[in-house]
Amino acid sequence: MKDTLLIIGACGQIGTELTQKLREIYGNNQVIASDIREGNEEMMQAGPFEILDATDSAAILEIVQKYKVNQVYLMAAMLSATAEKFPHKAWQLNMTSLLGVLELAKEKHIQQVYWPSSIASFGPTSPKVNTPQQTIMEPTTVYGISKLAGEHWCNYYHNRYGVDVRSIRYPGIISWKTKPGGGTTDYAVDIYFKAVENQSYECFLSENTRLPMMYMEDAVNATIQIMQAAPDAIKTRTSYNLAAISFTPKEIAKEIEKHIPNFNITYKPDFRQPIADSWPQVIDDEAARKDWNWNHKFDLELMTEEMLKNLS
Ligand code: SER
Image 1 (spheres, rainbow, N blue to C red):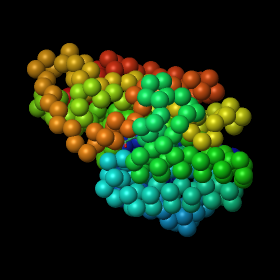
Image 2: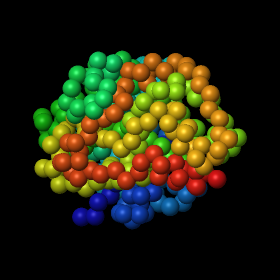
Image 3: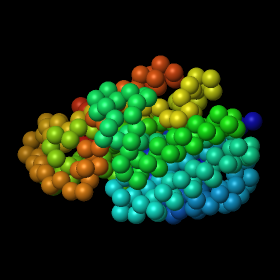
Image 4: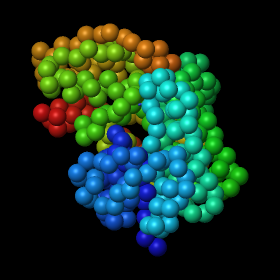
């Protein structure tokens, strides 16, 4: 049987590029894109698209049956900064969507599920440097609480019902095709857009705030790699730590200056500073590298070249 994939949240930052890549691999018609609103021209033209509310599991089931979907990538979520403004709405979106999809897998309507977790599932009491796969996890943001709870729901459905669900704790993801919305790591995307536009940027985090980050191409490859791995290679059914680069606003600004010498950065930390301060700085992702051969390609230098080239 040919695999048929449903991407929920296909118009978001990761969903957009993940959908494109999956369509290259599996064929345009095998990848059903869906989101609460229509996507860009390319997304709408390239293959099937459905308007879908991620929390409406009956609607998801209808689409699953219509196209004979066997894998779901659930990418819809409310990110950390927005979630702090709407805690209950964030919980409702992030949890209801996951439980709905896990139920579909339990009932054997689908065979495989991908669901992203985040570095936000760690908290201020977790080790900040080389944060281990297994350690103290006491998240203080509602987004982090929803991700940590979600990880354990995944593990529970795997252990209790044999559901094949796979997950990665993404760091901040940097991309030029689609901007992120409502995250704490968004500055590392905005900074490139502003550098190209007007050579200056006011950063909402302080200059020495170190956070784990990753270029989109690496994140998309990791996602596909974990989904294509043999089931018994996946030893962790909560979620895998995943790492590539860690840097501060000051360090990324310095890297941009190599290309745009009069680039200017100023700092005005806001409500997102304490969120960033509660997260790890450098993640240990040995388990992902060992279990399913994860390897990143982009460092800060290469990523900066790519971002500036594509944005100018
Ligand atoms: N990039 C996300 C955020 O900042 C973290 O998963 O909310």
